[in-house]
Image 1 (cartoon, rainbow over the protein chains, first blue to last red):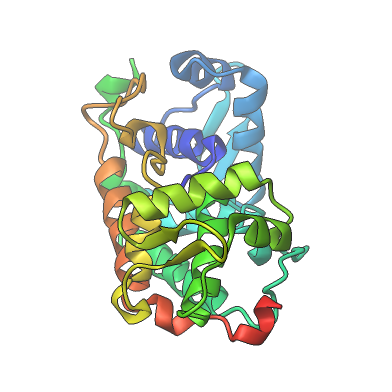
Image 2 (cartoon, each protein chain N blue to C red):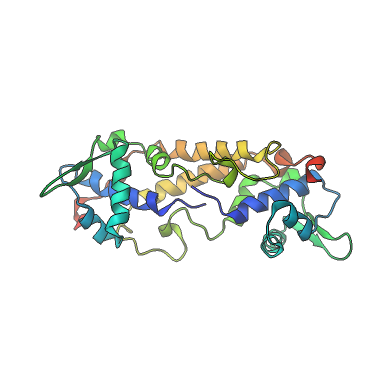
Length: 138
Length: 138
């Protein structure tokens, strides 16, 4: 069971932002720290910004900051957002699937329930619980 | 969040086997139904056989059968087996990772707990709960 790298790096970004709420993090700075392309990181912050989790500031000293207090952002909500369009199995995608069992499958409901349990467990914590101490951002 | 196709087809295989406990399913038959290569399906049944979930019978009329009663095989156990070596995120792999946050990361423990909740939820059901009616195997 795997989360996308989109989610992985999205979390790393948010952990930095939550650790220093007063500071704007540039795409270049975060991409360099993660050893990731700036293009890939920009897509992640754009997705976070579009959903209202992050706010981007332009100009010198600009960059991304949290748009909400860290203790208001639940971890399950972050996963739901960043894993959008990544179903656990093919048949749970919006497009459906070519599975010959479909229609009489009793596994789908079990997988959906387990995924809900996964997200509910994450929703017990917020970004404030996983914020990085500023020193580590150096 | 995605399960591997290995797990997806492993479940489909087990759902057929659980639905007709008296019948041996050949690799060719299952691979044809799933539209999968025989080689890929053989790897799945080998893994299931090595763990004692499935038993393979040789010769004419041979194939795979459940090695245990379906109501003794928990769904979480199937996922644990087939997803072996597929960590939720890079840093949870046995090999570790190059993540610069590692060591002060408080996300890892949250992800581990959520994954445990996912598996515990699946463990509430067994293969008997998702067995396919024989007609669908036609």
